Structures are given as C-alpha cells and as structure tokens.
Length: 554
Image 1 (tube, rainbow, N blue to C red):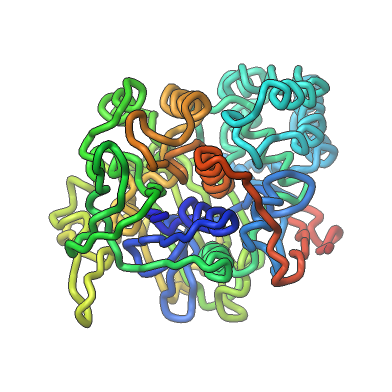
Image 2 (cartoon, helix red, strand yellow):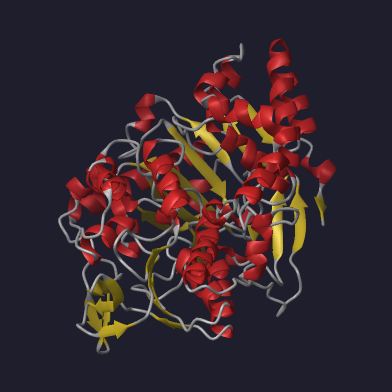
C-alpha cells in the first residue's frame, strides 16, 4: 500500500494497515510528519500552530481509544483548563465559558439573572450531552455497520434523543438570539473561538462536554510532538515513510490504481493506493478529473468554489516574549470594533483569538518567557493579490528536491504582514501593558503559508465545512459508497477530505479506510493499543476568577 500524505490521516492509515498485515509506504512532500498538525522553531521558542484542544485526550469515549491505538498520548501529560474559552466584548465585559455545567450556570446567572430559564436549559442540555459522549461511534464507520448494529447504535442514543435533536436543528446564531442580555447574545456565537455562522448548537455542546470530561486537553510536546509520536508508532509497526517526496500522478492501468509518479519522474508501484492529501489535488490533478461520479464532480467543480463550503484558513501572529505575563488567560476571543478589524487583512468576522500558548505548552519555551498565539479566520484572496511569487517552488538542496521551503512573495506582501503584526502587538499592549517592549521573536503565517506547507486548497485546515451542503454531501457519499471512487479499483480516500471535522476525525478516517480495505480483501480487521509507554496523565489548571482557590489537580 502506498499512502499519499504524512499528515495525521496518512499516519493513521499507515498504522492501521500495518496492524492488519499490509506493507505500507507513506510519501510526504514535507520534511516533517503531521501536515497541519505542526510547529516550528524561532530562536529559543517553538511556535505551535495547531492543537488548542484535542478531542479524545481523556478516557471514557471511543476517540480516546483511537489515540491510544496510534500511540499518540502514552507517556505524556494531558493539560486541561477549567475554562474552555473567555469571550471579551468591546467594552471590556467578559464571559467565562466554564465547561463544567454547574460552574457555567452559576457564572451566567450572575451575569444575566433575567435569562435564568434559557441559561438553565442550556446547561441541562450540556449535562445530558456529557452522558451521550460515551455513545458516540468513532471506531467503526456507519457504512460498514449491519442493520442490527445500526439499530443498536440508535437505541443507545434514545435517552439523549431530545437534546441531540434540538441542538442539531437550531443554529447557534438563532439560539443565542433568545437571550435577553446583549452580552450573552453576542458571546455565545464565539464559544468555539471564532464565529461559525452555519454551526448549530450541537458542536458547542460536543466540545464543552468533552472538555468537562477532561477529554479535550492538550498533549505534552504539542502538535508536532503528537505527530512524531504517531510516526514512531508507525515505524515500530514496520511502516516506511519517505519525506520530500511529492506525488504528481496516480498511475492507473485497466481502471486499477497501480502506484504513483513522483515529481522527479520516479514511479512507486503498489497494490493499493490511498490518498490522504488535499482533496482537490487528488481528484483534479493526480487523477486528472477521472472516475468522478455525479456527487464528486459537483463537489469538486461547483461546490468547492462557493462561499462557505470549505473550512477557512487562518492568519496567525506568533510572539516570543522575554518575560512571563501571568495575567494572560490561556484562551480569549476578543470582539473587535470595525475600525480596528479593518486593519487585519482578510478577516472574516470582527474578532481575534488570543492564546497565551505557554499556558498550554510550557515545555516549548524557555523558563520565565511567554509565547502568544493570535489568530483569526482569514480569506486567502487579498493575500494572493499582494503576492508576486509562486505558491510553492521546489528547490534542490544537497542534491535533494525540497517542496515546502519559503518562497519570495514580494515587498507588498511582506509589508502587509508587518502591518498586521504591528496592529496585533498594539492591541495586545493595550490589554497587557509592557508586552510590546517584551517582544523578542515574531512570526506571521497567512493562508498562503498553509498552501506552501501542505498544499491544502485555499489554505484550509479542515477541508469540507461541516453542517452545510458540502460536508453533508461528502458524509452521505462516504456512508453510502465508502471511501473509494466508482470504477477505480484498489484506490481509497483518507484524512480530512474523506470526512468532516478536526484531528480526531482525520485519525478515525485512517481506521475506517483500513476497515474498508480489509472488507474488500475479505479479511478480519484488527487493532490494538500501543503498550510501549504508560497511559497519559491528566492534569487540570484553573483559569480566571478564583483560579488560585481551585489550583491544579491531577
């Protein structure tokens, strides 16, 4: 089996294929594993640009089992916070979204007693959703479940049916409008860091419920450390990974995938080909638009370019600070006035998420220093207009072709990055006096950086947008026909473009695709937990008002 892409979807596919007796080779165009799940060094600082919370980091759900099978968490501390996010309004008011329903209810009632009924209803739903999490299926794809298995799964959700039905049928924007308090009406739209106009209430319940159960923490070692752990598990299972290997074509003979061609002209032959890379690149470039049924043709020639159908990219500003800033919360979404938001090129909604990232990953920066991570949803179009260079440019280094090195994009592009960076520093200094003088290292990543780094369409980090036509259509297609393409034998899709959602979905997609491969080869599927290191240790750190009283627990 040849797997295109060494992100979490590709690494997961490789691990599960090795567990089931397949001999695999992953081809990754970067020189690091992880894809979007990555980090880079600037001086003494490591800038981690992915995991702000990891679904399944704690036990009591099927997500956790997948991470243990992949060896992602063993031997690490999982850091949790008692507050999922803080939302601060333009006039300085703050809403602390505690994930514990009791603390959240008490806090919201203090802020808006007149909304008591709506607040209690929301928190009651969160309590119910915490119980429902144990039933959520991640281990086996619905498309491979028999009729009895599906009925049994649906029956297990019956006690939670009403809260799930209500939360998936109402947009958060409509739900939040029911609050009388202008503060809560606005803040509830930003629980998940950014505004998601098409999200119902359900994903907010899902994240908060996971967080409350200490199953949405962050892993020691950060995002690249997570990817490295899975890469090591893959190698222990006997898998092979080749870096700086860019696939330019999937080889097809007699309607059967038989291997791939690399950018240097070499061919790698295989019995099975799995694409765990950018979806558009796979369909329209590597396969040249062949083997698309009506659903995929519509997705990749029409839906892809429609507004809101693909999850957006980010602009991110990283700052390495020479001293600690203990007043900085781990995660805060600031709502911005239109005048300041206009200074942030490409911004979709007038808000910015600020994380004092050293609270998440103290091991990634020197003692008594701070890393700040500031990000906002960003359209790629204005950055493309400013850029004069190629989006990717291969170069030879010591006789080896490298594909993801920085490229020149022109003075206007660099000047705009500096303008955005300086605006963010000015904003932060206003909230944390002395921050500007403490800046030691700075870096800016735009959606074009993501394109260079991963090849993802328009710099997206998650592929298809969930809860809209694109994501719903894709999920239904996979459920109905599996992760293959009609008329093309021995080919499968994996990773974020074969599902919707974040890292756990990408990891689960690897498990699922190997189950389909085993079915097609008429062999039983097997998986086992990695026992090479001890189980993870969960710790919880208190945030915000009364934090000293609650302290840290293990």
